[in-house]
Every structure is written in C-alpha cells, then in structure tokens.
Length: 105
Image 1 (tube, rainbow, N blue to C red):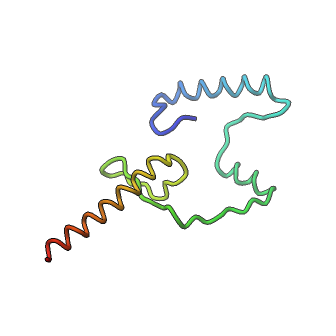
Image 2: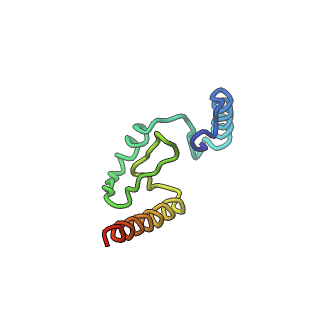
Image 3: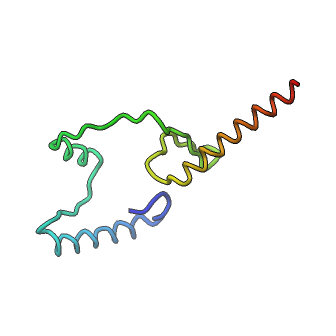
C-alpha cells in the first residue's frame, strides 16, 4: 500500500488497513482471505505451484535519490525514469569521451 514515505503516521496507516481487511473479509470471504503477510509467506504459497524464478542479468542501472542513497537493481517499476536515466547516462559518457579527446588533441 503506497510507496516510500507516503504514510508517515504508522498508527493511522495500520488502523486504515485493519478496517479494510475487516470489511473485505466480511464481504468477500467466500472468495478471498485478506490478512497481513510476509515475503516468505508469499514465496511459500508460490512453491506449491512450482514457480521457477528467472535470474535477471540486464537493466541493473543504479538509481540515486539522495547523497547517500543509491539503489541498484531498480528495474521493477518507473520505466520512464529508468529510460531517462539510461539516455542521460549515454549522453554524459559520450560527452565525457569527446571532451577527453579534445583535451589531448
């Protein structure tokens, strides 16, 4: 639910989620079970379907949103940001190479 820094008031956030879970289980429990979970619960549930996870080798661009905050492997969402960073990186590399060549001419 949400993203980084969207919910700064944990008590309010959990109260809202608790209410949503209660409502959904009261009205849709014949089809679904809503509950808090963990990544290991999710992976364990998938094991019964024998899901084979691919290994991702490409598109592991670094992403930084602050002076001491670098994320590597940020490829799962925000494709427009990813494309802009990739294009800008190529332009900056090409410009740096041209400048270096001019310095030694």
